Length: 195
Length: 128
Image 1 (spheres, chains in turn orange, blue):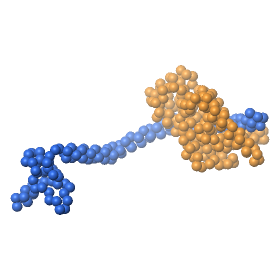
Image 2: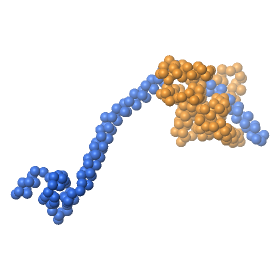
Image 3: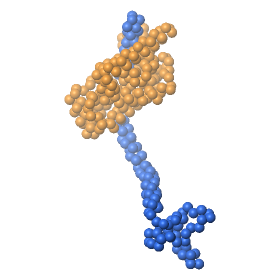
Image 4: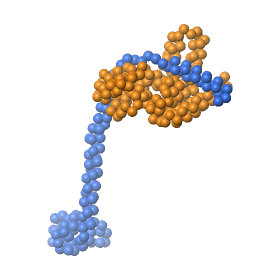
């Protein structure tokens, strides 16, 4: 659960005073969400825990520069987004592997999630297939557009929150998300036509 | 948006929802805060050791460059002093350097001595 504004402010003061216990609280509160976001952003085989740790390390080192212009959560998402985009840009020379080639971590996450439900095997298989296909579709987007779509459609952030995270106007974000969705529809149609 | 696009949009949302469900709440190893703090300290100490390395090697090098620049600036200032001394530093093979400065004053002698790299052995040569 995200912090209320006054809790946020209190935690920020303690963090900027260099209190390590406050940092532990921050990590424990947000590591799940940051790791999930990175899992949705990074390609197969990426060490998501390592990436999440790097995000929190950067947050600790950059704490003095943060002025509270956005919420702590948005600020962490900003660091995570920038980190993920950097990594995706470096990996752009190596295209995503096809649908069947998920990393061990992604496979585990998928199986644990679908196996934990009471759904019948047929439904679980369909869910698994849809998740894999979503990964493949997202891989076809530019890293910046991928991040906007993930933040909006998967993380459930509002356009105003996304504006605070990426530092762009709401109007510009809307246009980019709309174009990204159009591209994904075209990719999805192409996939279905091949089947 | 036409009907086909609406259908594709709906399917896209289903795919994204499936991805959301598949990637939420995956287990993480405990102790991420401690590891992040350790990495931060290592990053800071790495910064300081880089700074010390630069101080050991790069600052002396910069100091040498600065000293050379000062020497060259000093020489340039001396050569602009108005004298009648003909320079001996660029004498050709056929040209003989003057034995004495043209003007008999302290400044001229000092300039002549500097520019001719004069040393005491020259006296013995002049006197024979």
